[in-house]
Amino acid sequence: MVTRQGTGTTIGMNDIKLRRLNRLSLTSHPDLKVGDCVPFYFCPRSVMLYFLWQGNHPNLTYRSGQGPIVHLEADLRGSVFWAQQNNRRWAFTLSNAGAYYFEDRCNLDQLHEINWDAVRATRWSGRGIAESVKEGKQAEFLIHQSFPWSLVDRIGVHSRAVAQQAAEAMQGADHRPMVEIKRDWYY
Image (cartoon, rainbow, N blue to C red; front, side, top):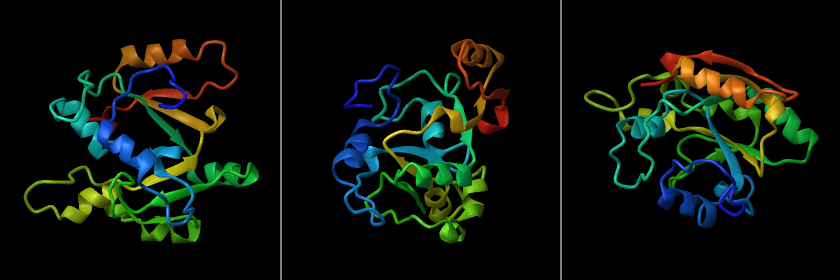
């Protein structure tokens, strides 16, 4: 999106975005940078969403909270099938793909290596919570270049107002995924 100067609001941390674009390559596809991929978390209530909700991280310029954020849900196996049929590279990580030390895989037989308990966790930091939970919660699915809108199955939103905005934005579209208010996907 940076090179295409797409419309919309940038909400991530610029230093991490630049690192993903320029320095972090996938071991499963050494010529592919993390920033060349569309990232998806395996879970709602991500660590990044928490930072957006708090709105006080020094590396964030976005300060509008979690309310306007929408979650796009797609089927993992269907997405991989589409990628393979369209010669599109994909991978998944075992932790945050913006960190210098992440590991990645490009074989669905290795999905068991993701810390699924961490992905499902609603508490990922604080007293009695291992750092591995925070790391595992940030596992990502990455697909090179773009992700087809037709693979989005559901849109999760925080409020009725955002649900209405999402529905209006899809008017006239051939593909209109179900929009649901999913407050449990938010902080």
